[in-house]
Length: 194
Image (cartoon, rainbow, N blue to C red; front, side, top):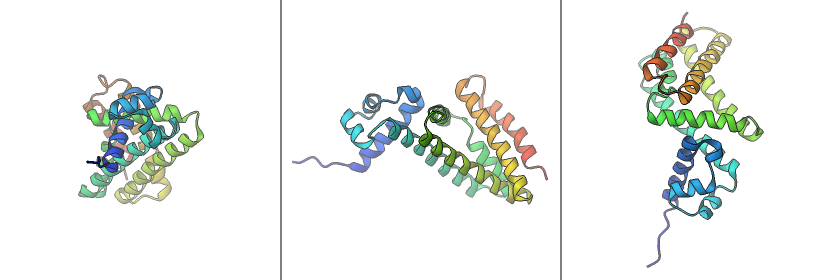
């Protein structure tokens, strides 16, 4: 009996293998062989799906963006009011558990890889700006302040979130969930002030 290929399951397995390999090993450890081992397939299959290292990196960044966007969408939709939405979305970006710590590590690794590659940098900038735009929109709804003020506050809040995330990725023992949240709360209080 011929074997039936499940292309969707295969793509999902490869996608998860790319992301987890990248989060665990960083850009230098993201190789065709490492992804194939994690996915339980041949390097030829990985190469067929991802023709080069850049394609692997871009895919890992897209997975990260999709995960964080879906989480932010849900947190925003579930918030009872605009100020709560700002707090929920901002807090949702912190590395408060193992899955989000892996996302933080992937984010830091992608940024490092993007510094020397304009294509990777463009993807990073696009995705980071979409988060800043979301924060600015939410701050506008929560405070009623003019757009430029909200954009400035969103930039500062985003920089704080990214700083906390970078520090946590490098030293999760020191940057406990409680410490991350306390640092973010200071920035949130300032961003939401009328």
